[in-house]
Image (tube, rainbow, N blue to C red; front, side):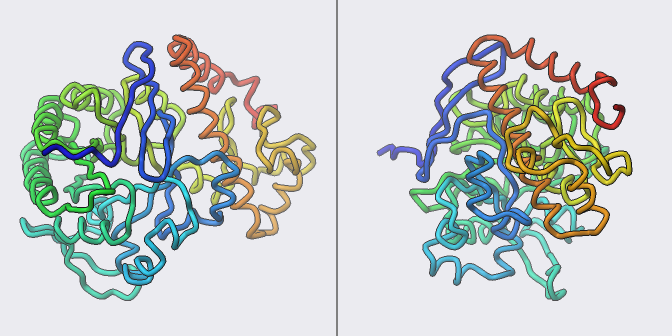
Length: 377
């Protein structure tokens, strides 16, 4: 007997290979392509759930590794899962901890990943089965399999070994996953080798998962080779399933992947930039800390409808930066997330009207025009 999938994707329109779609989840429908802010420890730094709703967020991402350490799954489960714990009514995706295994230089064996806690130094061992079990307890709408991520460039043999282990771990994850109201996504690996990406995608798709992440990119690879790797991966994935580029959030990267047919994205990029005083605009990104903004009466971006742009001039925000006020990261995060969500909203409109190629070109040209860049006025 075939059971209905907890998460389904419906393609509404295509413009070339760019896709306009709807991702139906137990906690609501997401219009795609869509960007997920990263709520690593069940919070997007400096923002609360009301802020996220106000900036136009449809879906957020939380982190398995961090939440299993603090606060642990019991307090979260007691509040009916992450949705109740963080007072977020919309869809939630949890990543598996594979990126933390990479970034924290975990010891990896066939059984799993040996990791030390970033909080107290204690040792923990994360297996594919445990990663699934933790995510089931967290109650996210979408859980990810545990994968092996490599820094690039890497020797081909190392890429092959990581890909094969990721596939074996995916099989173990499928056997473990049992929560009927939670989707399980596989992860395509293969470095920047098109043949390996295609093979990984096809073999992962054979496992019949609810959706597929493209992992192991945005870790130092050449952009041209990244595009080739994404194209190869997408060629091996079923058209009826959602496609998720893990860890991508810059304007140029988002638009390039959307043009190839990717549906979901996550990244700390907009909020991390904000914590360093960086502002995202359609005319190029700039740093509000620069002295030239000390008397600037303009908003961060005159075309932006966000709370920050409607309320404060650059001069005030630059003052907050100079005095190291903690309100600045929040105000810039609000703006940067609105800018990112609006970019994808405009991309969706362009796909629906058959003008995505022109929209893509216009955005890139606008960001490269010196006369329109705030730092050059």
